Length: 124
Image (tube, rainbow, N blue to C red):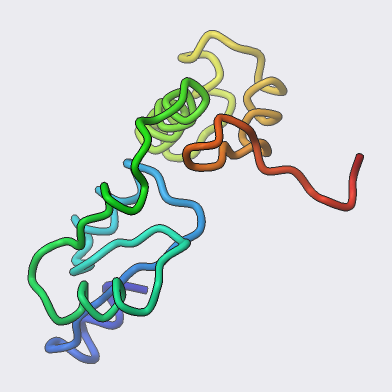
C-alpha cells in the first residue's frame, strides 16, 4: 500500500503500524518509502510524535528488555524467509529444519519481552 499512497498523495507521511513487527519487515517498509514503522502496542502520543517529528520515537524506553532467544530465532527465520521470497520449503532447507517444523514455528510468534509465544486463547 505504500507505493500507491505515495503516487496519489506524494506529500502524505506514511506510518506503518503493525502487530507483527520484525526487523525484516521494518527494513522493507522503510525501503519502500514508509516514514515511520511502529510495533503495537503504542499509545497515541507515540503515534503523534512519529508523525510530527522526523526522528523515530524512542522505542527502547517502551520495549526495555533485550530480545529473548525465541525472539532472536523469530527474527532470523523472518530474514531467511524474506530473502527467499517467502518460500517455506527453501527457507526450511536453509535453516536445516523440516518444512512442517518451520510452519509450526511460524504459527507461534514470540511476544516481546515475554520469552513465550502467542497462542489462540480458545485452544488448550
